[in-house]
Image (cartoon, rainbow, N blue to C red; front, top):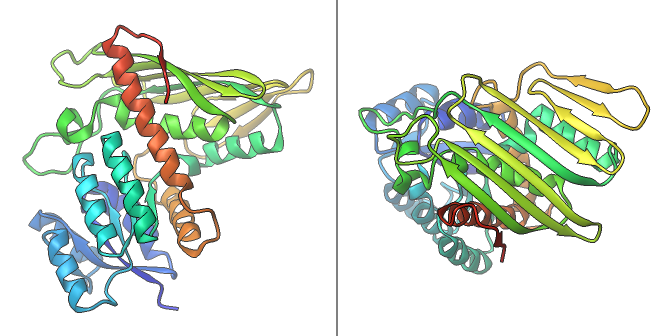
Length: 349
């Protein structure tokens, strides 16, 4: 079985250190092309995959695919966020499945257009929601499914970083700090992860949000370094709440949180979980690596590939990941709107 054939678009560290090692370990997928405007990044990719062709842009790759229809089945997009919409649209129009780094797109109208295109194309569009597959997050999901703490009604989530991550655009600005390229600061960089996690852990749908975006340490940045948000969810069991605190202005690098249910709670302490339920002794689940350790995680990405294959093969319902991405985008946009209005409470659509 030769597997589905694909191109990686954007050959930065995330692609070469996070995505590519996972793709190389698969027998059901093959990377047959690399695309990047940087000659240096294409050369680095060629050292890792010597027999695979490289292209300066997606158009060149698609022209080659037009001559040889067997070349591509999918693309894996790992470029800066402002490029995602055009690349996704081109790939779907070319009849390809698409896996794309978060944030999927930066505007709700772009997501709406892609939704319509998806229906016409019959292809799969999936966002890389890799934090779901971190060992500690997988365990949280498992405990919730098992009913370890009853019905979850409250989540607190804290992300502490000492500054924004760097990028690999040689001689150019860090795109994460350019709102036109990134869509925002830490709210997009880590808030997107936090939103899809809580959407998985809480049954219900977001009904209200209020948020504040701040520049606590990096006052000269054009994007926020700190974000706080409260989200309320409606459910048959009543109102559920999520409180997020995300910052690049910490002296620590740490992730922590609390998942509280009707029968107990899960304390998240970066490299361990502590489950407390009634009068029973607390259970501790240690993990080899802290959630905050590293940034590329090919082992997490391997599970993303499994999820991608499940939608392509029909083993899982089509569109679930895409709808989660649309919800994350709306939460981010409404957070910005709330902060612009002084942290006003806003209803979700």
